[in-house]
Amino acid sequence: MKMHKFLLMALIVLFLPLMSLAAETGSAIKADVIRAEPYADAKKTGDFKRGEKLQILDKKGAWLKVKTAKTGGWVRLLSVKRGAGGSGNQLAGVLDVASGRAGTGKVVATTGIRGLNEEELKNAKYNEAEVKKLESYTQTSQQGNQFAKSGGLKAVKFNYLPESQQGGEK
Amino acid sequence: MKVIYFILIVSLSFLMPQAYALDLGDTLKDVIKSNVSGKTGNDSKEVSSPDAAKNEKRINFRNPSMDEEIQIGREITGNLLGAAPLVNDAALQKYVNQVGRWVANQSERGNLPWHFGVIESEDINAFAAPGGYVVITKGLYRKLENEAQLAGVLAHEIAHVTKSHHLKILQKSQLLDLGADLLGKQLGKNNQIIQKVIGSGAEICARSLDKNAEFEADRMGVTLTARAGYEPYGLPEVLQTIGQTNKNDNSVALLFKTHPHPDDRLLKLDEAIGNRLDAIKDGKTLSNRFYKLKN
Image (cartoon, rainbow over all chains, first blue to last red; front, side):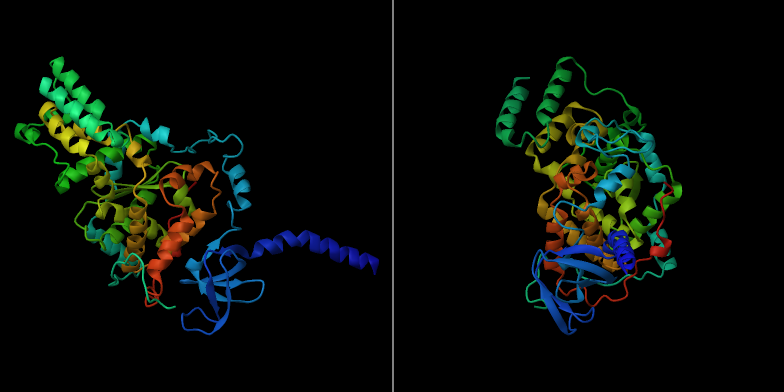
């Protein structure tokens, strides 16, 4: 019996990090309503406050399926900030090491890896050969349309978004 | 000569608070110097063009023609490419031009010869220059998951071009008008004048736009993405991804310095969007044809 308990504990300890990684964490950037389905007129299942932590389980168009401490459901994508909140996520450190950025505060001189800071921009020297190369890839308007067609993209009529909107869904 | 000095002093005192914007004071000094030493602009390829009359034409910065705007943008882009060259992958470059061209076709400036490129830098950033030049870093491309997100990023930059945001920065400096007039009389070549006006290297790419210009480009970016038939949330998704990057990470240092924080941009977008995009249901992400980087 004791042995079983020990094994169970060991398993939990081993898999806990994986379990917490399975769902992406996020936080609410504003108070909003949680709904049963990913539609504006779907039934309300709860709400959350600004800054509240939540788990992101799924994504469908403009909607995210989330789980809060109390409830779960669908919420507008723009109400949620991905990541652990605060100053970036814990993965950043790992990624930094992987990309050779760690430690030095400067980009490590690995082939192909370079930054683009103000100093580098200021000291940049005009490169005609690269501009010509850039221009050599230019597509015409018709080629653009053809490319869209091959992907099944169709132009949609849609007015420019105004600065902010009053009298929306709320 | 005295007249020029007088103009110089008057213009400098008048524009002191804006000295940061464009260092045309030095430019004017250069002009005077070259005048004194009897040199008026020296030779370069452009000037030896057979059409001498063409060289007489001066760039009108206040209200540039399309060709002039392209010349200015080309010069800025050339400097930027001097800092970081294109990624050596023709298929990648063609792909971003295809996506970018289609999105640009949805803007009111489909007549520009749009050029798009991915540059060799692990920074996360994107740049636009007048006349339809748009460049994104490999570091930013790496963060993208599908074609709709690429379209969203390019659409934000396309909006900067269609709204002449960078051109307006150049024009805002009254010194520029004055300087360009003066320079026009002294120097022979447009590209030299442009180089003087845009400042040192590609530093204009490190300059911040007004934050309302960024919010505007975000709103237009989402609109253009939607018009192009993509899932309109491509740009907000990228902003969410970038927002996760630790702000102390060097790769976002310049982006965060020159742009409002992604969280603020998302909030502004949310205000503008509300339920306006609800009607757009069959936007595509096209993740299947999204070009994967080779390294």
